Image (tube, rainbow, N blue to C red; front, side, top):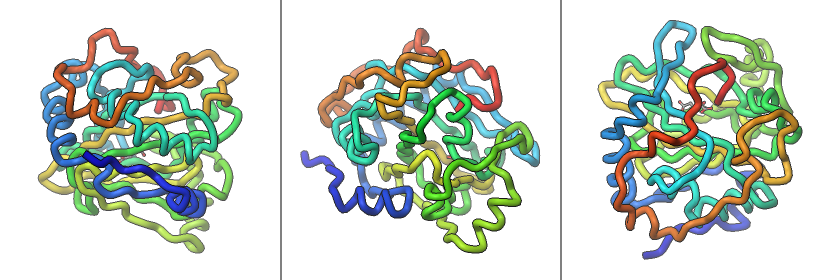
Length: 271
Ligand SMILES: O=C(O)CCC(=O)C(=O)O
């Protein structure tokens, strides 16, 4: 089987726009397997918590730090992803955290405008040499609240963040000005598509108004030399043990381990 490999041209697009959408990064077989495990995963279900948006709608997620041999980590450790991240970060990546986002039909809430580095700055990372890799497990479209990004906004630098509902969001006065001069893009995705995006890229998503779930797996990476000065999980400055791209289809395990270092919602900035 042939797996996607990101190119120098992909890097140019990523550097220019702050994101790159790769269609069919994962095959439908891989996603069927992973999504099938995810929706029946009792550990994920137990460790998930929710976050209220401005209107009080709630969106669910489970977040953990260290990579292991679960199917979610095999995706995050897969050669095609890790070599892509390495290309975009211009250096060796480490894994910061992964999360399974579960935006359920009708009830899944919005995420306000933010930059991931708006939060991660507070975790003690000095450089924004960080990015996220979002793989859709279900279709993601305008109706079910797909990700929206402001193209090129990673070049604005870090914007101040403050509370909006239970979420921390970017200063809206500034975002509104930015929207007058930069392009807003709805990132519609099919299962298996992957979006790489810079930690300073402004993004948000609407509530899920549809009768279909919107689930995705998001892994965040840090360049290994960007060790945070605040105490945190070692994963963000530890070498990733890559696995061959075939590892996902070869997976025979079940749910994620109960012993995984899940984040128990302790603060409103822990993602
Ligand atoms: O996937 C979404 O709807 C929002 C996710 C997000 O903004 C994030 O993880 O930073």
